[in-house]
Structure formats: structure tokens, C-alpha cells
Length: 422
Ligand SMILES: Nc1ncnc2c1ncn2[C@@H]1O[C@H](COP(=O)(O)OP(=O)(O)O)[C@@H](O)[C@H]1O
Ligand SMILES: O=C(O)[C@@H](O)C(=O)COP(=O)(O)O
Image (cartoon, rainbow, N blue to C red; front, side):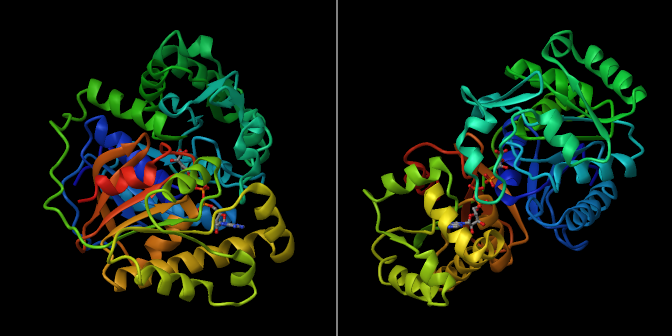
């Protein structure tokens, strides 16, 4: 296997978002969970997206795991490495986007890395280094209340600089508009000036193709799925990938019971849960009871097993910013987050042991906990449910999954997903 593109994603929903984007752009793509075992049978593909649960762990651990993934990808001839991060740049001043980018860049002998979270298809745009979510700056968007990585500075040059060893520069939209050579020349100039990373503006899809072509002039880049799209288009345009004709057939229907789990507290997910209440039974976990040691997971699983024979169910821990803040104040942000993720993972295991073969999970960290507990090694990418969210089929057993990024999906996402998981 000689890969055109090797990708290291810092969470599992982000990995499937990128795998979806690359597949739509014509790259034969597979998503792995963690660094694959050497004997893991993988189809012949153009790109592999290695999913790590590294977005919210200590930076040194994130660097070590990302380096392991890079070594596996390089051993399979990866022509370029993309470190896939969140389109809303989810991170804290303690990392991990800066430390991982620094490490991958230095290991590859690259002087500077192009960095952009822009993904116009999902209304993430960057202008003069400032990230906008829809019409509002990042720091005025719901991401300012994220339970684990509250984003309170929209200036990504500042944000990245605070978590990087390297100095950070800017590639402004005026330079991007001049094309890939101008962007590459700007990267050279910034590197000569001692910068190790450069936030690149992008507002329209066409900007992504420019950035992808420029990023390919170096071994390593960092970005969200928008940069992945640009890289894919540049690889096809350069003749380094022959675009796959159509969506690969993911095989026969699986059927069987279905369930949805929501750990994301994003505004989008809260709305989707509310809409789901009209079409399926919904049980809301009580974090306080859970964190006080009550068997909330066991009770929720029993509730679900009584109902899944009649149709899909949804179990959610999700809550609004004030309720999340109250739980975190009482039990601690990380302790609360990890305990709820573990409960969701336990519920997922019980559901699958009880026959569920179609599972929708909302939330990146939540998806990581669930998929790790189920011990799933890899996924093939199926049809897109909503921008950034594909149907996934497991490679080691017959299951459909959808791993929904917290902020993605339309109002009826849960029902939409199940319709595409026959
Ligand atoms: N009611 C709640 N109170 C506090 N934390 C919560 C609650 N529900 C979920 N969480 C935690 O919030 C985090 C949500 O992160 P994640 O699953 O990545 O969602 P998103 O994709 O929206 O970022 C997880 O750590 C989860 O355990
Ligand atoms: O790029 C994105 O926004 C997504 O792919 C993503 O990473 C979202 O992460 P979660 O919000 O943690 O699901």
C-alpha cells in the first residue's frame, strides 16, 4: 500500500468527517481507530485517516500518539501528512494543536506548516486569521461554552501561538487570492522569519484548492476537513490520485435494533435531541445521580432494552451551558466528562450485546469512548447523512455507525441517520 495522503485526526467524529470529505472528493479512504495493528487487513486505498482520542488529553501524550500514527502512515508511503483538527479549532492554551503540529513538522524536517480550520461547507471561514462560525466570530459562537475546550479568542494566530513553541504567522486572503505559488512563497518568507506555522485565510471553497496545492509543497499540514478537501483536489489535479468512480458499495442491509447516544452538549445536538423526542423514546441521564454513584447507566440500558424491539431509542446526557457548568463546578470538568463518557460507553456495550447493530453517537469525545469500548478497529465510509457526517460500516463485524460531530447535522439528524443505515 502506498498512500497519497496520511491523516491523523484528534477525535473520532473529526476523523469520520474528514474520511467523508476525502471519499466525496474521489479518494478511496478508510478510517482506522487508533494506530492499526500491522496485521490489520485494509483495502487498497489512497488515504487512511487514523482516529485518535487526543484532542483533550495532556499535550505530551497527544504528541506521542500522533508520532506513532505518523510512523505507521510513513511506513506505508504517505506522501503528505494532514493533522486533522476541529473546524472550530477546539483546543486550550495547553495544546494540543500547537504541540502536535510542531512535533510532526520537526520530525518531517519541515520548516513551517500551513494551518487552517476553514471549512466553508459548514460555515467555518477564516479572515485575517480570525475564525468565524457562520456570521459570528468564534468567541461569540456557542463554542465559547464548550464543556472541554471553550473557545474564547477568535484570533487563531494568537490562539496557536499560545500553545506552540514556534512563532505563528498569517497568510491573508489577499495572498490566497493570488494562488498557490503566492501562498508557497509566503510560507517560505515566514519560515525565513522564524515562523513554524502559519494560519491561512479561506472564505470560499476555491480558496481551499489553493491552500491544498500550497500545502502539498511540504510534507505536513494542519487543518479541518476543508484543508482535506483542498489536498484531495490538489492530489487529483496533480495526477497523484485517480479519482474513484463512485461511492463504494458497502454491502447488504444489516437491519436489527437501532439506538442513538448523545453526549454532545452543542446547541445543534440539543436541538436534534428535542426533535427526536417526537419520533422515538428519549431518556435523559441525570449527571448528578451518575456522578454520585447511582447506576444511571444500568437503569438507562434496562430502559432501552425494554423498547428497542419496537423501534429506535435515544439516550442523552446532553445539557445546556448552565447545567453543564453546575455539574462541572461540583464534580470537576474532567471528572464529570470522563464519568459521563464511560457511562455512555457502558450503555453502548450493553446495547450491542443486546443485539443493536445500528448505532448513532453524537459527540467527538463521546464517540471515542463508545468506539473504544466496542473495540472497533476500522470503518469503511458510506453515504453522507449531513455535511461532515457519513454512515460508517465496521470492517470486523456487521454494524452501521454514525459518529456525529457535535455541531454538525440538521434538525432531524437522528432520524435522517437511521434512514441511511438499513
Ligand atoms: N450534562 C453534562 N454535564 C457535564 N458534562 C457533560 C454532560 N453531558 C456530556 N458531558 C461531557 O461533555 C463532553 C462533550 O464532548 P463531545 O462528546 O466531544 O461533544 P462535542 O462533539 O459537542 O464536542 C464529554 O466529555 C461529555 O462526557
Ligand atoms: O471539524 C469539525 O468541526 C469536526 O470534524 C470535529 O472535529 C468536531 O469535533 P466534535 O465537536 O468534538 O465532534
